[in-house]
Image (cartoon, rainbow, N blue to C red):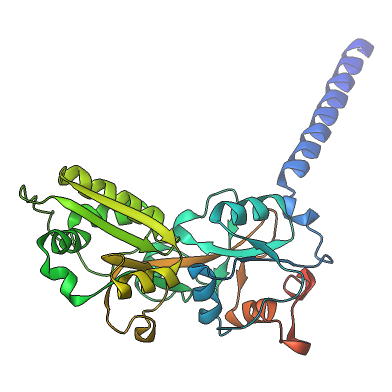
Length: 299
């Protein structure tokens, strides 16, 4: 009887020990890493370089067109630089083209709306911009250049645009019809935001038209306007709303829309931000409304 009681007691003690260990493990895995985020730290405001089309569009969209950056910002001159900074800096906030944001960082909702292709297309996500080509009307009188323009509106181009996370303005289109008589060179320069996508579009067009070479160069939206206006390039790339004063002799075609995502470190518990809050983070002249600390956003 005594041996039986001892055995039962041993079984109960072991069960209690295992239960305790299980609860401990459960608590540790259910605790979000967000609980360790120090909201008393300052916001590390990260921006793109002056002249960046992404920066110009973002500042205009939040109502800060032409305004200077706040003191102490971290400036990066590439998408890779922005993503690296936010990935490695727990208190950073930045903006970048939706098509290039990776899962290594966290995208915030804006006014409660996620930065998705569907929300950009229907207009509910407010921070988005057009990516366009500018050109002189007479450029399309040349069969080669007109063929490339038609290609940009084809199913072949739309598939590449969609695969890269961008939003087409037009609905479904027909496949591009190859013209065996075409040969020559097309020059395209401008926005570094549109350039990676244009590189892929150019490569596809060259594959379809093997006697054609498409040269794609960067330089920024300003160069895109200037090169198209001066006839240096057949097409200039811009990553903002077309401004006729920048190229009076040109018209434009919107290749696609690009959402600008607001990104933070993956451990940041913030889920959504307002346009007003963004303005007060990035405005050097916000005064008493300036947001510099995470506890002003996370309560």
